[in-house]
Length: 169
Length: 214
Image (cartoon, rainbow over all chains, first blue to last red; front, side, top):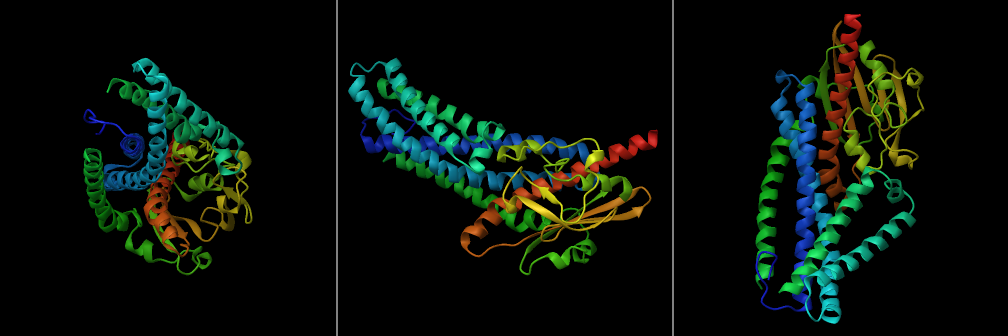
């Protein structure tokens, strides 16, 4: 079973693995999207400032590679965290669907995924706001949206989708 | 299990591509970006900040030609810092890490009085690791921050100057420190420092052109 193929049978373990796979993949895709954006934006500036005789091509290549390497490493590290969170969420959605959605309504399934992930995001947001030091410093800025806001939104949407899919299959 | 099979296929596929990329980075790109723009003479030449560099530091030496005189470039260096005119690099990247950076596009008369012992911060109100202290300053020529982060202006003629920047990083022991430095800090620092040098070039040349027109 994978998000690429229709599942034949469910159990908590296979659903946790599915969640882990989704978490890791989404984190890496998010990292790629950021990398593409950062490469494009910084490359435009390099082209604006440097003359062709200033080894522009080498600078563009080195700049892109130097964005890709740390971005991908951080994406993998945070992907492990995303995999853990989604691996815990997916079975929870599955169990609650068994309990609260016996007629397998996709809408109710999506709602269960939405509520569970929404609660997780709410608790994490509360903990983040209660924290001190550096974590606190990024609150209310673009860093908060980048590190928590957007990933949190993706997590909620993908959990709702997972709830929907678990009702269909 | 199909899920594991696909997971491993994707994982190994991505990992192999990434490892190939890392090898290319390590053997070709890293040696080049560690001395980006600098000539062999500039790399080997001692700089006034060298005595501050701790033994065993990892050192990069980068340089760029600016079409302006040292006197026209210097004011941009004196207002370096989060609490002043920023670092002229990619503030949209720095702000993802809570830097609250705002890069000045104009000279700030109130921030032209940098002196030895002043702080140059990377983020606001941070612990000592988040700021450098001015250790040496020769107006129009040398600025040394922290453990030897040196900005050196070398005039080529009356309208062209080489900005040479040497950055030392004291790598701690342990695989965790090495991993952080080589996989994250060093490539990211190249992006930010070359961005800063291009930002200084862009601003100084624009101001010099404006003065030339007037």
